Length: 175
Length: 328
Image 1 (cartoon, each protein chain N blue to C red):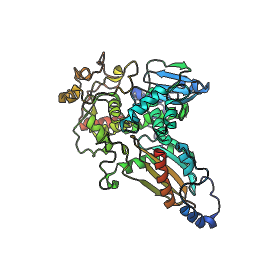
Image 2 (cartoon, rainbow over the protein chains, first blue to last red):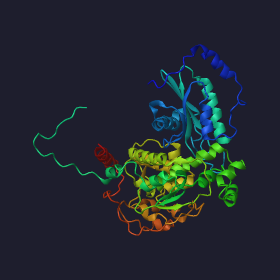
Image 3 (spheres, chains in turn green, blue):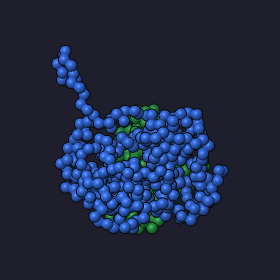
């Protein structure tokens, strides 16, 4: 599917990548000091090649926030489909690391740390023209949400997107 | 697709097979609440009170929602220690028209903005699902009423309605029998059932023949809709069944329960192992009263469910087949 042409700036792609990787985290201009959901998604949109970013609940399929464009042009439908993949990934025992006492263990309900501690960190899907990175968000209350970023394959940098999304997920709920 | 004519030309086509009310109710589409749409169009501010919950509007957008069936923001935030009860209580007491609870908590740095927005949005859509459920009484709107939480992240009315319809369709797709939504749940022996997930196991552990899915959600500090999803999935797997007859809307309290009115975990009825083994179809003599709930005035069976609720895998399969055929 082709939705909007990407700018033809391939010569700069390599320098662009290394530039972003070596750029120290934080201190960039325009960084919001109080990250709400929208600020977090807008920050995700600054990733190279970002086409769309959303925060999605994988139990209900609800998009809690979305910016940019999405496959098929409908961010609600895209969220519901991504949620289904995320749910299956989070629920399969095969993807759970050793020592993870139940993906969402409620054994010690008084223990504040990690009411929703997803067994999986992220999920990467690639196709001919794009990458999808789904980053599970751990929260101190019960939830089932992930950040979903759609990257154009020509400009997208998976390694950078993984690192940044991990930081964003943490900042979103820890401040 | 090839169209096949089943009636010879010139003859009267046979009458349509009877279809249960379910599909007719779904056909009404986006008009979940015409009143809500009118209020959104006139950019009204106030609270819309419906049978199963309330929607707070500010300038025509949904800023908050509450339902006795869905755990509130406070339950979600306090249950796992995100906030301490003292901090929440303090914010509730100091909140006024200008400084809502949300703003007080954020300004004091008690909770990160992202976490509060996330939890609040989830709570709003969760409560709205119940508030916008079909009701037998008309809704009332009180102009000017505001919630003490204050505006955090307003949501367009259209988005709330679309999501509510999508959630109904999702539940129907998982398992078309709505009995597990409001009836007491109990575990059942299943043949060759898939292993429940960790989240589902937590729900199963609390299914004692007395608690309903919303009760379990409250106890786990989880969104009620998430628990409805798990209950339907477990019912489809044969691991969970709803007790019959369901108390249904009869047991809904008329007013909202007081905040933190969490059901006691160690109620005497919960410890009674016989409560969960009531014969299917038999009137529940004691279980609701023992749980401290108002007994349903008339234990009438809901329309459309005339069969005794049994947990035979063959009958379950036949019912699924029937529902699938009806859905064609």
